[in-house]
Image 1 (cartoon, rainbow, N blue to C red):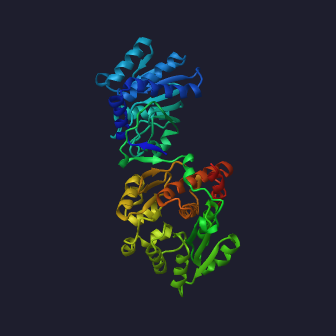
Image 2 (image 1 turned 180 degrees about the horizontal axis):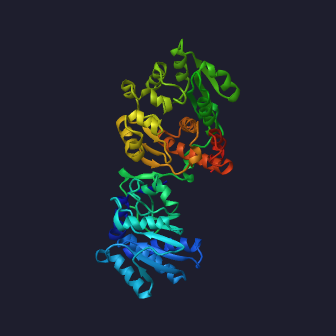
Length: 489
C-alpha cells in the first residue's frame, strides 16, 4: 500500500525532509531533476532537440537542472523562462546561475523543438491560468513535440485533478516521491500520460487521519488462503438478491463472479422467471425465487437465515417489494454489498436509509450516488472524495464510488483504485464487482479490506481482459474469465 498526496501534504513532506531530517533542498532538487533527465535519456536519442519551459519557482528550478543534465549529456538544449526573475525562488537563482555559466541558450518564448519539458508550475497551483502563461501552454500543446511534465502537468490541480483553465497535455510525467491526487483522478490523469513515480529521498511524515492510499498486487496477499482442512461452508454462504421479471443477466454475472473469487456457496434469490436461466448457466448455484403478485417474505427470511453475506440490488428494480427486500436485508445486520437498484430503492426512502450500518459496502456509480445524495452528477464527478466521505461519515457505511477512477472511503481511510480501464465501461461490469466484493466478505477478508481489494481485483481482471480481447471488444463476462488470473498475482 502506498500514499497519494495532496499538494499541501507534498509541501509538508518536502519541508519535513529538509527542516527535520536535514537533507538539503538542493539535494532533493538534483535527485528530482536526475529522475526526469534519466527518463528522457532512456527514451529519446541525442539527435532530438530539447526545449525546457520554466516558471521562476522551484518547479522551474527543477526544469533548469533537467536542462543542464541533458546539455552535459550531449543534447541540444534551450530554455524558455516565464515570469519575473526578480521574484524567483532561491533554488531557481542557483540553478539559473549554473545555466548562465554553461552558456545554455535562454529565450523568452516557445521555440521549435523535438522535446518540450514542462516545468512552469508545480503542485502548489490553485488559480486559473491566464495571460502569457495560458498562451504559452496552448503553444506547447499545439507543438508536434514529445512532452514531458515535471512533477505534474502545469495547469492541473494537484488536489482534485481539475484543469485550471488550460493545462499541458504531457506524454510522460515524472512525479516526485508519491502520486498526487491530481495525477490519478481524471481529467488530470489523462493530461499526465504515462506516470513515473520517482523516489528522490523524501522522509515520510504524513497525518494518518487524512491519508489517501492505493494498493498494489502484493496487497492481494491479505486475501485469506484456503485451508487444507475445510469445506464449502468455510468459504462463505453468499446470498445474491438480484434480477427481476425481465432482467436475468445481473444475477448471473454477480453469482459467477462470486464463485470465481472463491465463494464456497452461492444462493440466488430472484424473480421466478429467472430460475431456468440461472439453473442452466450456473448449475453450482442454489436458486430461490419470488412472485411479484404474491410475494413470500418467509422465503426471503429463510435465505437470509441461511447465509452469512448478502449482495442486494443488481437488476432488481425499485418498487415497493424491492423496498421491503432491502429493509429486511439491512435489518439482518450481516455483511452486505448494496448496489445498483438496492441504492436506488432507498434513495427516497429515508426511513430505510436510517437502517444502514457499518457492515454495509455501498457501490454506487455516479448516477446512483447522485440520486442517493440528491446532488447533480456533475457535482459528484468534481468531488468524488468529498461525497464518498460524506456518505461514509453520515451513514457509517463503506463507500465504493465507481468512476473512471474508483474512490473508496471506509473506516480506515480513503483510497483511490488505480487498476481498470475504459473497456470496463460496459453493461454488467458493476454486477461483476458486486459478486467479487461479496465473495471477499464470505472469505472473511473483512468489510474494510473487501471494499478496497474488490475494486482492485475487478480492475486487474479488466486490465488482463483488455490485453486479450481489446478494450473495444470487452464484455462483463470477459472480466469474470480473468478473475482467477488476477488472483494468481
